[in-house]
Amino acid sequence: MAISCARTLFPSPTAGRFSDPKRISPAISGSRRIGVRRRGPELGARVCSEGGPAAGEENERFVGFLREAWPYVRGHRGSTFVVVISGEIVASEHLDSILQMFLMQDISLLHGMGIKFILVPGTHVQIDKLLAERGKKGKYAGQYRITDSDSLAAAMEAAGRVRLTIEAKLSPGPPILNLRRHGDNSRWHELGVSVSSGNFLSAKRRGVVNGIDFGATGEVKRIDTPRIQETLDRNCILIVSNLGSSSTGEVLNCNTYEVATACALAVEADKLICITDGQILDEQGRLCRFLSLEDADFLIRKRAKQSEIAANYVKVVGKEDNSSMGHFDSDVTWNGNGFVERYNVKFQNGVGFDNGNGLWSGGLGFAIGGEEQLSRSNGYLSELAAAAFVCRGGVQRVHIVDGTLGGSLLLELFTRDGVGTMVASDVYEGTRTARVADLPDIEQLVQPLEETCALIRRTDEELGRALDSFVVVERDGSIIACAALFPFFEEKCGELAAIAVSPECRGHGQGDKLLDFIEKKALSMGLDNLFVLTTRAADWFVRRGFSECSIESIPLERRRSINLSRGSKYYMKKLQVQQGGIAIEQVAFR
Image (cartoon, rainbow, N blue to C red; front, side, top):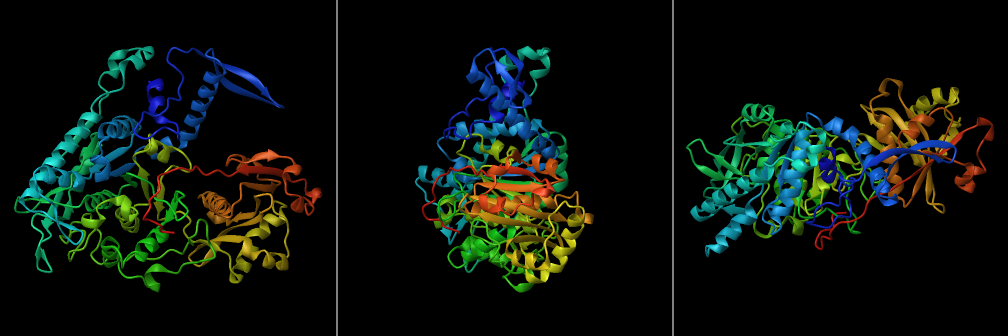
C-alpha cells in the first residue's frame, strides 16, 4: 500500500501538464536497507538501495517528503473540504487524465486519510458546447445566462454526464499488484470510494430583472445541511451539481460558484478549494501565493467598475467604508500590498439559507457567462470573489489551485508554501509595521527577555531608530508580539531580531505568524537568507528550518557589532519560493 500511495502522494513539481506525476517512490522490485553514514561530526541515517546511488537519492527524497507531509496529514484529518472544479477543467479535452489524477488518485487518497469532500463541478462550458452541437447559441443578459428550454436540457445533460464520469473515476480501488506484499489481500479489494449525490439544493427562479426574463436560471435558496452531514458521516464523497429544485418541483440552473460558496458556508467547511485551468499571477508574472482577506477584497473592488462579478460582490458585501474595512497600511508590504487590521463584516442579506432569502437577495450573485465566462481571461475573478465571500462568512482558508499541474492539489495541501494561491481570513491578522505609539508596548515585551539575556538590551533611542524595521501584532488595541528585520542588501540576507510574544499569548502560534511574515517580507525585499543570533532559543529556530552556521556566514557589517561576550549561536535559513505557472496575458491585479 505504501508503494501505491507514494506514487501519487508526492509527484514531482516539474511533472508535465496532463501527464502522470513523476514517480518518486522506489521500484517495487528494488530491495532497500537502512544504512548509516557520517556527515561531518554528526552521525546520520540515510535510506539506501541496491539499485545504486540514484535509487538511494529517490528513497531519501520520498522519506523526506513523507516526513514533511505528516503534520498536514494529521491536521487535515476530520476536516471538510468543498472543492469546486471549474467548467474549463471539466470541459477540457484532457478530462480523463485530469479526473484520473485529481479525483480517483488524489481525492480518493485524501478521503482515505479522513478528509470529507463535497465536490461541485462546473458545467457552463459544456452547456455552451452542447448547444453549439445542436445548432443553438447560449443566451446571456450581461453576464447571466438566460436558461430557456434548450439551455435547461443541455444543463441537465451536462450535469448528469459529469456526475457519472466523476463517480466512475472515484470507484476503483488501488492496484492489487501493488498491495500483494502486505498480506491478506482480501481486505484491499473493497477500497473503492462511496459516492453520493441527490437533491441537497433548493433554489428559486431569478425571475424578471430589468424587464428581462431569465427563465429557468436559479438562485440558491437553501442547503439541506443535516442530510449533507449525514451523508459525509457515512464516509461518502458528496457530489452537488449546480441544478437545484424549486418549491414547485422545477429544475433550475444555478451558478456553480454560488452553489459552492453556499455549501461551504452552510456546512462550515474548513476549506474551499477552487480547481482552475491556470494560476493567479502578479504583474511580474509571479505566482501570488498568499492573499489576506483584505488583499482579495481590495483587488476585487479595484475591478468593480469594469466587471459585473466584482460590482455584484461589492453590492452583496457592502461598500467600502471606515467601519467595515479598517485601513490599508501601505508601509507593510511583501509582494506589493499591505496587510491591514481586522474589520467587522456586515452582510446585507445574512449568511444562512434558512431565512428563505437565498444567498443573493435582490438579484445579486457571482455571474459566469458572456464575456467573463472564461476564468483565465478575467484573472479568476469568480474564484477570488467566492474566496473573499466565504472568508467573510467564517471559512478560514480558500485555495485556488491550477488543475493542469500534475499533483497540485496534494502539493498545495501537504507542503509548506503550496503551489497555488491561498486566501485566508486569519493569517497575519493585526500584523503591521510598528509606529511611534507602539514603542512603550514594544519595550514592555522585550524587557523581560533582555533581563534574562535572551535578547540584547537596546536603549529607548536605539529602539526608536530601529522602529521602521519592527513588525508588531496588534489585538484589541494592545501589542501582543513583535519582531524586527534588518536587511543587508549587498549580501542578500537579513537578520531576524527581537522576536518576542506576550506571556499570555505564548503557545498559540504568534511567533510562527511573525516568522512567516518576516520571511515573506524578506523575500519581497530580494533577500535570499535569514540569520539570527540567539543564546537560549536555538531549538525553536532549528525546528523552523534554521541551521547552525559560523560567524563567517554573518555579513561583515553585522560581525563588527557583535558582542562576543554574550556567546551567541548563529543560525541561518535559506528562503525559497517555488516558481512556475502559466501567464495570464490580460490580468495584472498587483
